[in-house]
Length: 289
Image 1 (cartoon, rainbow, N blue to C red):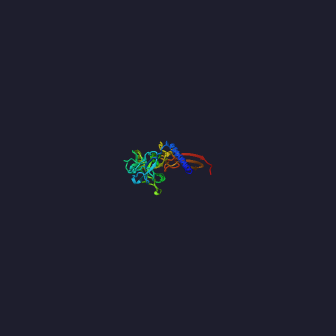
Image 2 (image 1 turned 90 degrees about the vertical axis):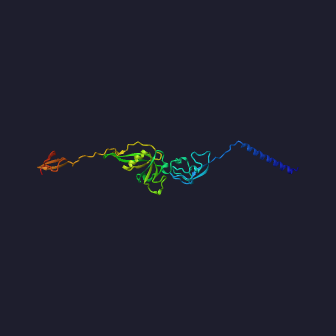
Image 3 (image 1 turned 45 degrees about the horizontal axis):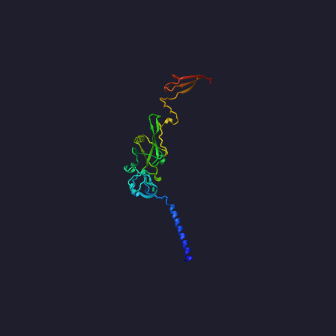
């Protein structure tokens, strides 16, 4: 065979064997490498913003595919699992729907679905002052103050009526009020039945004032209230009884003698100053003029 044919053939065979060895080596090296499997799951999200208390329809929802090692706790796979439930809080567009955001399936719709068992909703009329400047919004925690008369001139008492109750609605809005809606004239609170009775009674004899709490402060403070006499830590003066006209003194100069006559308060108008019964007479001689 001609050398011009043999030499290129040998080169080709050598390169082929080298390539085969390289591929075999790589396959052997990766034979025990772990196989990575990407896990995906379906998750329901809000297609648009959903207000608290509103029934959720299938049109409000969408299902998306997400990567993850396992199913996220509390999520839903299909819109059918969520449709018909009621939102307990504002849900933003694109936010995953969690079971903690939804009311019990038997709770009904509207405000009643947002009330925990054993609680009540009560509405108070407020203005810019009693409603904390119109700055309250659903979710705030408030105390209620009221002022009452216990009887007598020194009996005005101001005390905390209830503490740490939640604002569930401002006006007729369960969500965040719009900035151009003006100051709401009512606030709805979530209270216990006993608290509702106290608030109703205080509203009939006065006008309770709402006091805003920190969102992280839920401590109940023991207080007996503050009375009018305690504003400057002194008691108000007692009211004088049977106070008559003040006693008067008159200076009389007679025959070179100066006399001071003090008339008692009970002196009647028809008594003469020259014949004072019980009056005090002081005389001092003076030089004749």
